[in-house]
Image 1: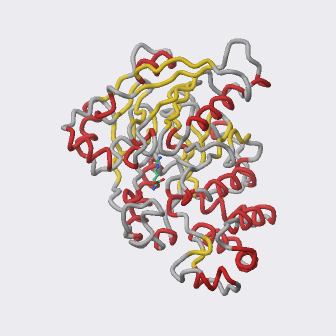
Image 2 (image 1 turned 180 degrees about the horizontal axis):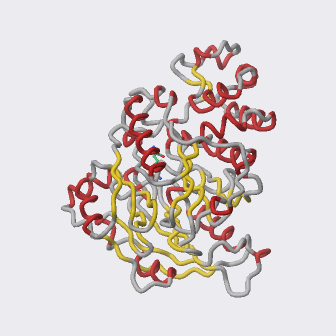
Length: 417
Ligand SMILES: NC(=O)NCCC[C@H](N)C(=O)O
């Protein structure tokens, strides 16, 4: 496993957490190496757990290790979520908080909640971290009471979190503050209790201000793109609600982290679950975008009204204009002449296949340098023809969860442009 989280507080200001763009040189990234939670997936539960199949776990781990290595080889510090979690679980407050979150499930009833709490409380920090991620199956607990007796033996007392792999979605750094998100799908709700606890308790993040919370309107990190300093695009569709976009806008305006939020409606379909499944930035002024939406994507431009004060942020009427073509609204907000959309030049069938396989979901390591799945050969060739260096990674197993390099990474620190 590449990289290791350290309990030492970061003293090098260059590595202080925060990001103001999608393409500033990536310094530190949060990943989650898939583990036993993926072994929980079966043909009976994979739909509910948001996977499109049953991955070969050892191969998924190899692919992920190669992804982490590719980042480390280019000087990126890789933090592993499971390591950070195990470290905070040495602290009683974090243990209590996360065990309570794990059993906070109306399916269980008081007796089974008590049994599960007792079981989890007896685990050492690394084992508790594993259990919180991989979940607790019926037969792994000697439970009692009605709910336990009536529960299907194939069911989980604490469901696993196979989508923790997609660290992009449960938190997002905007400038020097972190938004812990409010995930829409029940299978992912508990993920943000883990990211919230890591940011609250790990000394690595001491002093970091939390911008958003899991108790607020639905908002997922895959929908949030930092187009330029002060300009945030938020996709609204299957996962992020208009209320979530509005709340985030109020928060970033109130704290002076952005001047413009572009709210971008996207089709409410699995293939386009997040804005980053159809468009990601690969240069300061360029995006790779699914050709089928390139001409039809629109944006509403949201700004704080003139003269409003931070105290008004939660109540003031926001200044909203639009809709406009996305590329027009984005260029205006970013203060550039034109946002270049890299023409992937694909026939519609190839474009649809490569979009489904996360061809548009790239992770920029710096301007004109991006990680992409190797399988999307036509999209990658178009990126290279447009002057983008592509770091190719394998993803045949990782991709069965429907997420690419951007989905699988949460930039914790990017250098300013
Ligand atoms: N940002 C992203 O598009 N993340 C991919 C999330 C995939 C996951 N299986 C999900 O359905 O939520």
